[in-house]
Length: 443
Image 1 (spheres, one colour):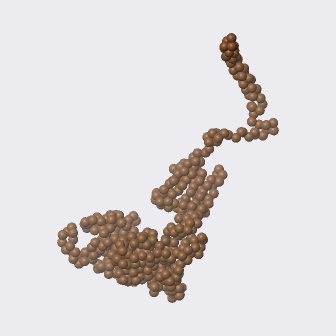
Image 2 (cartoon, rainbow, N blue to C red):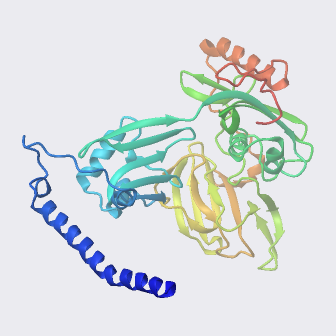
């Protein structure tokens, strides 16, 4: 009996289940019809005509509506321009001009620098922001400011210029030992520029030579980053001491020796840096290709193909082209009856042609092995009038000296720089938050 009652209850529940579901569905349908027929459901305005604010979107809806932001980093080459990059991103020319105009008060984007990075941000494929670090410490930021305008700002890292002394002794080469002493490549090249008229860094450097540099150094966030201008330098080469002091006079800034004579000379001692001499000036050298003795009225500098060759002095090009056994050849006439010649070039620099003017130190070509040559090297000659002379024998005179009016000021600067180089005067930082002695052996 009890068993049959349980079965009857279960059967009754099964019979009622469809009825309950149907009833609930009917109620839901009725409420839905009432909602769609109501005035509130058919309008987004209240009775005053004001727009009713839509409900806040869900998290999923917010993600879907977020604008698409893209970033593009352009590492610049010689051929890149600001307008070209804007064109690649389909930025209209008028908008690109508005960006440049806004930036110009801080930095002109027309002068982008090779090997720097222009960073561009777009939002839904529209230009939104540009970042460009145009110096070691400064970054230009251009941001959209409304639909049709942009604003530019500058961000700078905490920085300051300090003075530092870098000293070292040469055991292998100026470059290698300079780096060990704490100098950066720019400082080493600057040192070779300063003494280029007195020291041939391809042949004159000896083990045991020494150098000291007093230079401005850029500190960023309290840490040394880059050597700036050299204020004074000393170099001992083969027992002889050379000095240099930076002085800005009425004729501009230049380097002078202790007596106030300019270090600039008519001709550089070498048109190549840090290379070795493989053949000296000789009246009878055995030629490795022609297999006979004949004069070698020049100097051969061994260097890798493509090494830049600098004009030893300012002047006018009297020959630029192919010249028999010399291969690619350049000859320059200077203003004091001297001429210099450069042979076996892999190629002649752009713009160097017969009749063109060149400045001392400008690149006129590149080392090669054209003509009669056993390998890449530069054949370098010096002519005095119609005579060929040994380039290493030239004793050129200074092109200027400190004027009488400026001698007293030069003497004061020279004494101060000499004291710092010798360590007699301690260099102490006095700006910003870097408060320390900076007379270390490097930066």
